[in-house]
Image (cartoon, rainbow, N blue to C red):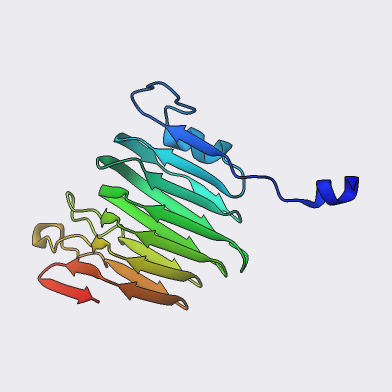
Length: 185
């Protein structure tokens, strides 16, 4: 019985992230919660503004907005997910600049009900909205935009979604860059 009890996977925890540090807050900063989260945990992110320059490396994780107004800047990187693991991003707004980068993921990354606006302010052509390299990605009910084409920067617009050696499924989403808009149903 002892070996059976020890073999059971740990139950996921829900960590509450709140930039206003309201009641029940586990972490005031998203980067702290991402660093503290264990495999399978859920981060419930309350409305507010958060910087994220973190890497989720080889572990399942769910980041879900607790209502509208969860605004993130920076880059969230997901890498090395084994086949049975997944990362879920739900209801989040990445913007000015915001991006999601995926590298070497056999597990699935699900982007659902999100808005990702890559480098809309500077137009310097530095960030893709979503970059997937050797990864599995599902984008559902989301809006993804690359940067605009700024002639005075002498740079082309950044891609809204760039996939290299990846499996990508787009469903009920809008992908926009410059004067081009693509809708997927």
